Image (cartoon, rainbow, N blue to C red; front, side, top):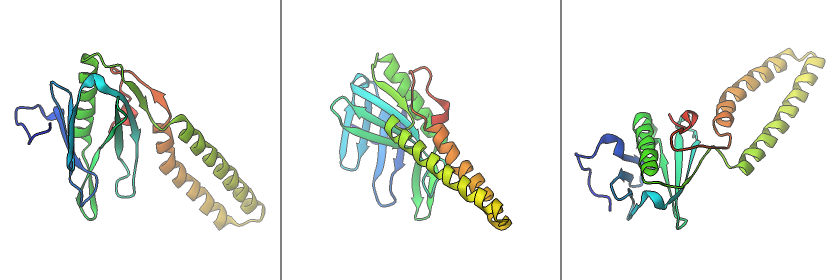
Length: 196
């Protein structure tokens, strides 16, 4: 079971974050027995070989546009989530990029050393990614139609607005779509695009 911080444990083998301002901290530690975690009043130790899958993704939110997520599933079907950000104040969500990267990398190394057969995937599921691409294609067609109409009627402020909106949209959504393309990976090739 997770205990208070052991100062002899290497920093990359420990990770903690707060998923919400009022909630308790989510504590994780890589031990000889497995992945030890404590979330609220629940705690457990999952043997590295009992971890069935890990899905890494890029999940920005309003308060933090550069946030990453790891969804870890046990063979029993239980799931835990590890986020790269933590709540600090009512208006401040802080990135923990180096600590998150070190912990996720160390977890993969421990699982590989234990002979894990976990399914390693990244990005959105194929169904969710396909739905997102269809929505983006429909939006692109609609925007192109509006742009053609604005040019044909000589509405130059409208043309500039549409071009600026399209550039902003590609900048904001393009990174999300590119990083969250469905992939599978191996323990020795954790995708850089899904780590901070």
